[in-house]
Image (cartoon, rainbow, N blue to C red; front, side, top):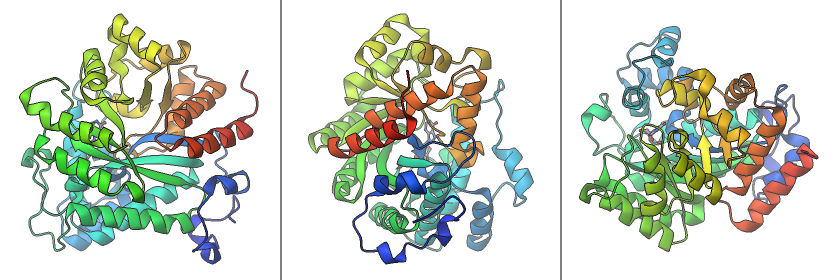
Length: 392
Ligand SMILES: O=c1[nH]cnc2c1ncn2[C@@H]1O[C@H](CO)[C@@H](O)[C@H]1O
């Protein structure tokens, strides 16, 4: 059992190593005291490969002789910090992010550490359930994606890792984390990458293969362009295969792309949830459909500025979503690149006038729309309700 004063690595759970993992049972007594927003949280939209700590990135890059724009942590912080300005765009953001991903690529040890550090950081924020997403091919050693998406691909990386081995590494680290940080339950979503249709069917096959090891869904990330074109068909086939094999579906849409991309994600990919989705506020018909269907929107407020998806702070679509009781929740997206925790995203929406009660309702929305099986979902929802008390 861990109390608020313990650091996760100090928690004495070694005797539980073989025991059945039921994190929600421990939560009442064990989730980390965060001060502000001190209640259990759920995070549905977080890229594992965006969860790094800058200090670890620098350490690893030096160890693996991988080029970084700078090895000075303060300068690296500035490099990350794209604030909402005319130049911010998803493309630029992804280019920056790829620099960091390259540090982890192809290294079993680095990917293990990344996963453990991510879960430690999330547990400390009082997150009791998280769905972490990543593309195994992007973390493997021989990525087949365009160089301009990842300027730092280092052919000389010493390790060799296949996408399957990346999956083994991440799932083993998640298993290890059950003992180290028993307050958090983690599940995985595998990402197809929009400009890489050639890997999509492999991503889906891996997702299905690792279902018993915690993969609950499939996603499409990268610069979105969801439309029924021949180039997009492999993504459609991948999602179809995932659905036929019992996996859930979410899709990045309405972030850089138009409101209609959200509708296309539902139509072409059978997406049950939407990553971001802010631009539905630009089209009243789309907005009405998403509200009527109660499609869950995984909103990432700080990320939305850093990627240029939303430019005017005071008019953030989340304000409208909260007012209209749209089914949505809050996530960090890429906390390593954003230099944030989930609490920063909560604070930002609080500045917009979103109440703590609404933030709790968003957490309940997230639990209800999670990709957990029904019995586990019920357990999560009831644990949150018990903590939150009446929300009327
Ligand atoms: O906000 C985002 N929008 C679209 N794609 C993203 C975003 N953040 C990260 N990725 C992409 O998803 C990959 C797998 O995790 C990341 O490597 C990055 O290329």
